[in-house]
Length: 245
Image (cartoon, helix red, strand yellow):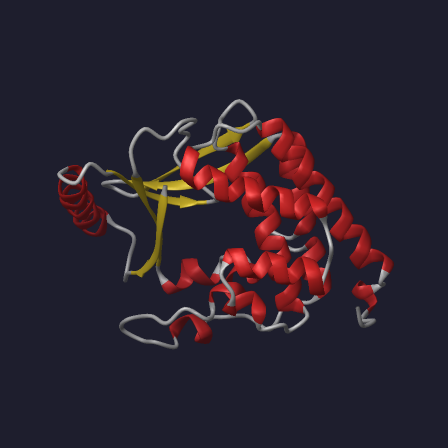
């Protein structure tokens, strides 16, 4: 299972954009099918992955973000700060220009897509996602729950993003420089040690090869453990009042 993440900025979110993306989806579906690869293109705000318990052939997932500048500025500050590093083709520094101030530990804990938000969703076993549906880009809302195999991806994303955002708040460049395999080992050894984190990241790597065959309940337990541990660590350090971790 291969991710292809991309953002598109448009003047408006209308049928012209949707029709063009529909043609792109058809073209790539046909090309990849000739090579035995499934293809899926979705415009989903959330940690979406196809709900495939057992992979029987390779699949490429184009996970798109499609924005106007205004809708992008309405995205959570933690997300825009994380995405500031990516260069745009037309205007290389665009995401840096649209980034907020560096988030605080308070925002990491209590802001949109912060630790409390993620912990709430994982504990209740339901993560709400919003999708712009082709071709007219109307919005639909759906939930991925414990009954879906890809709830594992929600657990992985909640933990991985929280760990990287923890480092970004502390101004460690490794959050934006290291790939997953290197980053989480480094984070566990240097920033915040957690057996739950490492177990989840190994499960994440396995799922890319096997599909989502592991237990969502086990993944939820590990994700909740990590998020609670990290929240307690930050609260104990009195980071919200500005004290150094």
